[in-house]
Amino acid sequence: MAVTPPPLPGTPSPEEPALPPAARRALRLTRAGMAAERAVRAFWPLWVAVAGTLAALTTGWQATLPLEAVWGLSVGAALAAGAALAWGIRCFRWPGRDEALARLDATMPGRPLAALADDQAVGRDDPASRAVWTAHRARMAERAQAARAPAPDLRLAARDPYGLRYMALILLAAGLLFGQGWRALEGLPGSGTAGGGALAQGPVWEGWIQPPAYTGRPSLYLADLPPGPVELPEGSRITIRLYGEVGALALDETVSARTGEVEPATAPQQSFAVVQDGTLAIRGPGGAEWQLRVIPDAPPHPWR
Image 1 (cartoon, rainbow, N blue to C red):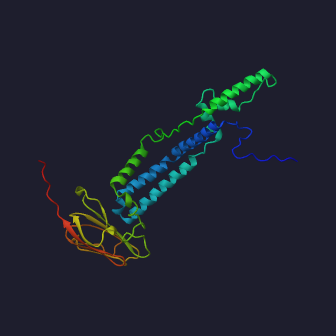
Image 2: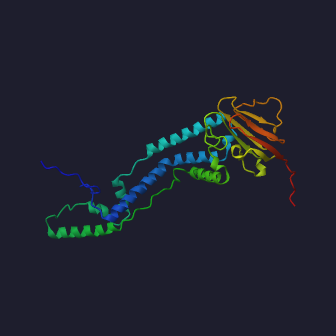
């Protein structure tokens, strides 16, 4: 019994027309463009969720919130991204060859690709009729050689009427340019390092110094500051986080002049304003100490 060998790679099946090389190349590009269209339409909510989350992280808000709030918001952002990913996977469908062929064929006059797939229905035994049919196919093949893949339609205005994608991208770009983009993950739980190194086993700490907004000065990451003297504007807010076993690390400071009910020096998170010169120290493994000097506020100068 004779066995029919499998078709060679790239050989069209009997029901598929044999296209000219230029048309095959245009067909592949058309199919890729349709896949890009469907990917953009299916996954744009995921991109908005990711860009919005990264934009928020570049502002440094995670360094000013309680650890529990950061955990809650992180879980919420992860759930939103997961839901957007699931929705995109559910909506995305890879374009078939017939769909790409129909779109490409519609861009050319006379639909030559469909004509090349047709068979002569009548007059097959008539030499004159066969000659006309052969000439017709030759003209269609010539037109098919000029096939050009249509540009994909990546517009999302109908699906995103409020422009959320633009807002997320603008906020992300602003955060990367003017915020703390290089430290977007430093305030998240478990992402900090002591002394700028990788997260080690055992107790570690993080700290931020946020000068008053009207000074125009950027935030400072304590782990990046070498121990020693540091000048700060009056009213700067310091936030300290201690990780690991409670009691392994302790905060020692004389710059806040806090009185009354003051949280323990070993509290996992502490925040206070700098009002006077003094020392700031992390006592324990990997700790450091700084001598802070306050730059007093100057009275506002009237415009002249």
